[in-house]
Image (cartoon, rainbow, N blue to C red; front, side, top):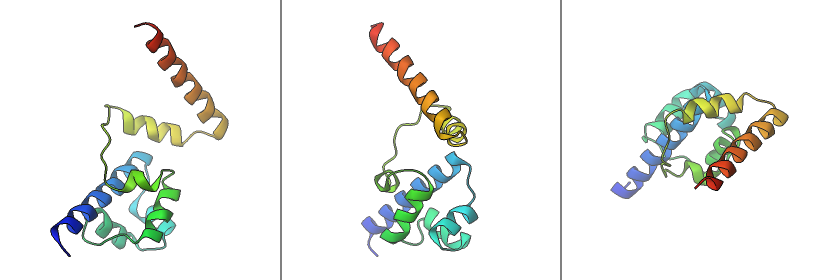
Length: 114
């Protein structure tokens, strides 16, 4: 494995870990969703093993995100983002829609006040 591949595995592993932690899941829960052991999830998160595409798709579905979100790109995170994602993830579909509409209304109000 070359340096580029190692770097990519580390970035994907970190993205998996950050998303999993933001949603409050354990490595065992993610492992079950990916049909692997929690030890394998540890190896993915540490960048020691490469994640097969099929497993990455399973992880993205479980973590309620796009596969692209797990490909190692680190979005800028505002303080409190992980807390907000955890709280939002615990809501039902109607509550999520209401919260999302509220946040969008704040954005429209802020954009209009410039």
